[in-house]
Image (cartoon, rainbow, N blue to C red; front, side):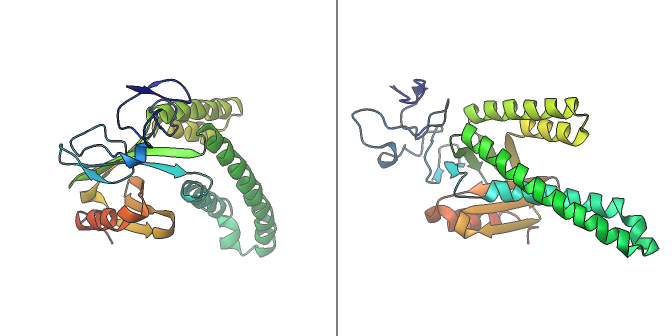
Length: 244
């Protein structure tokens, strides 16, 4: 057994990343881990290449570069943008119905400023989180004919719970239910499972190596290497009969 050069934790044979801190593994005196892929019978397979293992499921691990790939940041901005738009419509609904356009456009200006402030805070928060993850969001994927599991490595789950707890605590102190709920979601949602039978929409972003698998109550994101992108995309499409 080898040990992580970054944190000293034990590392399983053939692992590409440390399960404790997420650092890349290169055992002393051996070739880089990427040049010696594990066998397909190893259910602890930690490589980036998609492998069919002895349990009949496909396994792979992907270290998303949070600085170069903005997929997570854009998803967060989209979610809060939709929520903000709904709030804006609800708060200004009476202005629509009464035709008070002067007040409406006055409010629109302040909402525009609020959006810019939010984007600045969101970007700063994202960079802080990326720093805590050492710039890598490392996910283990498991895929079979019925479902796909997106699961953070244990060390990052711990960080997610710390971040979520801090956000929830800040929400309680500032009497902000939205922030409290956001923190709770971050702490709890460290893994996502998509049942292919429920998937309604599939979106592929080849340039980012990202596939979005969306069901009514589940929004999942899949990351793969360029070499495996087409295989994973075709596999998901073939097993999602209701997807567009």
